[in-house]
Each structure stands twice: as structure tokens, then as C-alpha cells.
Amino acid sequence: MYFDRGPQHLSESDPVLRVVIQHLQPQPPEPREANFESLIRIIAGQQLSSAAAYTIYRRLKQKFEDSVITPAMILGSSKEELLTCGLSNAKARYITLIAQAFEEQPNRIEELREMSAEDVLETLQRFKGIGIWSASIFALFYLHHPDVFVWGDVSLKKAIRLLYEEEELSEPKIEAVIQPWRPYRSTACLVLWKWLDEGAIRFS
Image (cartoon, rainbow, N blue to C red):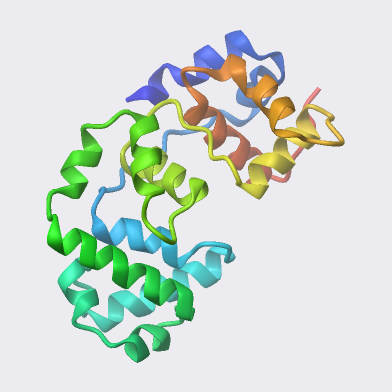
């Protein structure tokens, strides 16, 4: 797995992350299966707190008796049933449209597994309701691509601003910071999230 090499590369290429990695000793993420359910879980949790996102996901799972959620299950549900689970009108519509697309072409996940990270991001963003953040999360956590930076993630932007003492973070400035992390930007994202979770301590 890419995480075996990622921390060493980041420590060698970025002195700021070297100190963070030395103190935090980050662990690889738990394996997650790429399927239709994982994709709609990401969509359902967009722009919500982790707790709120999990609550909606659990309601969806309970509705389907904890079975793996399939496109057919979503298409067999009314809009009102999806709204009862906590989905917004927009998210219920997006998930239904994506379910239709996956029902019509059942091998979409297999095709995504064979793609480069760039192609995954481009392909997923063709679906209404999937932006760069959701596509990147799927590529990083579920398809296990080693070199994904999650653009649009507020937490990552905050971590970069604090660690690299950047008051104004334009896209070019972020790109300059993350360039040395290639080809292990996924590991860098995991390190930064853990750093924030641990209290954003400034190590000397």
C-alpha cells in the first residue's frame, strides 16, 4: 500500500511535515470497499459535520435493513422515504440520478478501479452532485490512489495555513506547498487531518 512509503517520502521532501510525522506517527487508513454505497455515503455527507453525516448514513442503512445499498434499492424508494432519512431535496435527487446511471451500467465501479486518479476525478464530476471534494474522497479512501489532494477540503486548507503560516491561501500558493508531496499527496492529507484531530499542536 502507498502508505508504507508515503511518510518517508514526505519526511524527506518537506521539513514541516517531517516534524509532524515524527511526533504523530500516523497510521494507514482502514481499508474501505469501493461500491455504490460508499459513493452515496460521501454525497449524503457533503458539507455536514461527521456526526450529522454518520446519522444520515445510519438511517439509510436501517431503511435497507443494514444490507449493502444498491442502485435498485434507491430507485425503489420514494423521494419522501429518502428525505425521511435526512437527505436534502437536492441530495435525494442527485443520489437517485446516480443510482439510475449505475443501474444502467453496473460495471461503473470496476471501470473506476482501472482508471488513473485524474480520470477518476474527471469521470465522477460528470455526475450532478459530485464535485472535486467528493470525487477526491472516493479516489483517496475507496480506490486507494496514492497521489490525491482533496481540493475544497476546509480542514486541509486550515492545516496548511497554520503549519506554513500563510495568511491568504490562493490556489497557486497551495499548489506550491503540496508540490513536494507528490507522488504521495494522499498520505499528506491523512497526516494533516490527524494533526488537526490531535489538536493542531505546533511541534518544535
